[in-house]
Length: 302
Image (cartoon, rainbow, N blue to C red; front, side, top):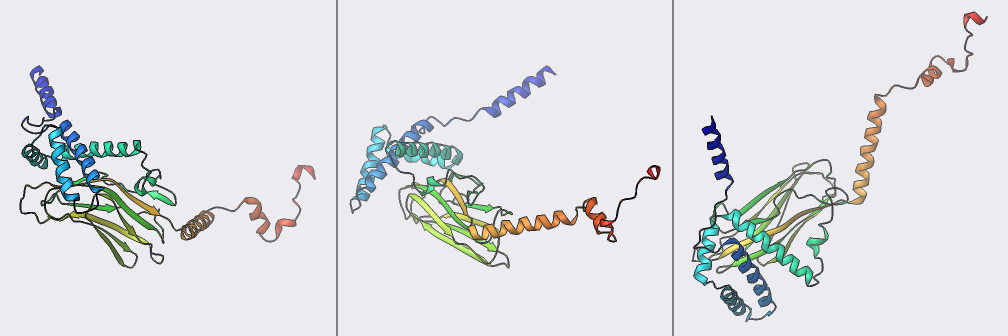
């Protein structure tokens, strides 16, 4: 019995131990620092909006690797390892994204459109209703290049609602063209369908506006983000798309929301009154015109 207990404890310990990254690859903390500096360098290169921008991106990337004492071959082989450990890479990029956001705030960056809605709750005329993943890693390989989602539609959705689906994107792309498609499909009463889509080819804020339908109520909402293969000849070329801060904002049309709320309140009142007995005094006053008749005195007082 005692041996069985020790076996169980040993198994639990083994299950709890997270496998470490092999030493021949860049370790997670170092990879985080490299990717952080990489995106800072890419932003610096983008400041030169001319034909030299691509050259500067390459030069700055080489400078980042040199700063960290890593060769391009070591970096690429490490990325290949992380490709097969997407959860680990996704965690690294979450930390990178947090550091980039903190750096922007320290430099006095104003709150963009994606940030101004972060304070909203899940209810109200303007509500943040996203319940899916907020951080997504996509790579142009089968089973890793598409994220599908479904939004639960309930009684808090009204006619005339409009939506904004938005997120931040960071590309790590070595070769080939960058192209992702984001699509949101809304299905309304009567099976009418509206499909809204957009292409995402640069890092930064991406946003899709889903227009209001003032005639029909929403029944279903679903969509996807799909990363194209990129057309690169080298299958091991650096190609990743990290998506963060995913939000779906619902905007009520105030006039139609008020009409819906008033209709609900009126319906509740009618339902409530339908099953409620009338007060006894009202019943006595409405039976046979007895309301004005004197009440007989008890027999003992006659």
